[in-house]
Amino acid sequence: MSMNNLVGFAIAAVLAAIVAFPCAGALRKHPGVFYALAVAATALYVWALGTGEGPSAFRPLLVVMQKGYLACLFLGIVMFTGVLDEKSALRLRLQPIRGELSILSFIFIVGHLLTYLPGYLPRLGTLFSGNATIAVSLVVAVALTALFAVLAAMSLRVVRRSMNPRTWKAVQRASYVMMALLVLHVGLMLGMSAFGGGVTRSTWVFWVYVAVVVLYAVLRIRKACADRAAAKDA
Ligand code: HEM
Image 1: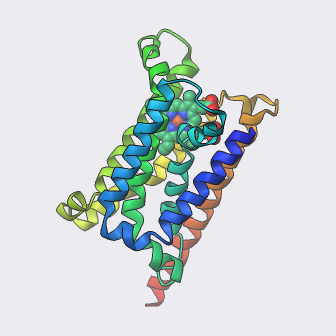
Image 2: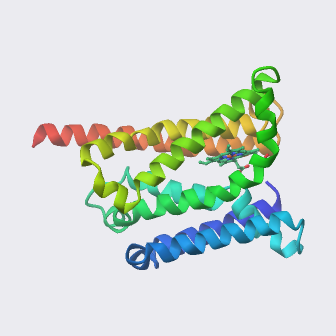
Image 3: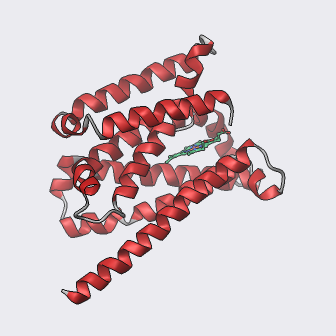
């Protein structure tokens, strides 16, 4: 991971923590303001992308958008909140803003999409005749994006209120599929080097994503078992 990426990740972590904690109340009351700021930041990023390199001090900020760090951190908060005990202080704090955080996460991933889509879309034509790895990578990326868009849209309060709560919860289970697609996407896009034996930057970045998602899966299964045992006792 280059210095820019590390600084970018640190900036994203601080921003995500500020939004999720000190700003939680404001986010709950005025989500539109936060969405508008996220859209404005994305527009600024796309503009900077179009105008080339820009000042070097600006690079870590671009990385925040390009690599989807902010989006992934918000997504991580939303997912890991789900494995916390319902009565824990952290769960009670984060639960009310999970929907808003997932919408913010989706807005921020748009910067990532706009970075890579222009390069990949023209290859759609060669999907069935060309390189199988590129074809699979693209299909996975598009499926991931579509699933993310649907789940984020369902987090909008108007959409959620108009749905049957049980159906809503059942469809949210697709987020587990999304986690699997995300790991597959990162593995495929970072060039399969993680499987090739040679250790490169991409290799260890891929394994970091794997480790986080495996940790999530273990905690989620543990919580499901604990919930089942508690339901039996009740
Ligand atoms: C059609 C849509 C998409 C395209 C074309 C695309 C393209 C790419 C490409 C080319 C890379 C490799 C970047 C590099 O070489 O450093 C990448 C990495 C990545 N993508 Fe996507 N992507 C798409 C959708 C998504 C979505 C929806 C998510 C999140 C939910 C996502 C999350 C990531 C992550 C986390 C990485 C690894 C970044 C890192 O190096 O740390 N992508 N993507």
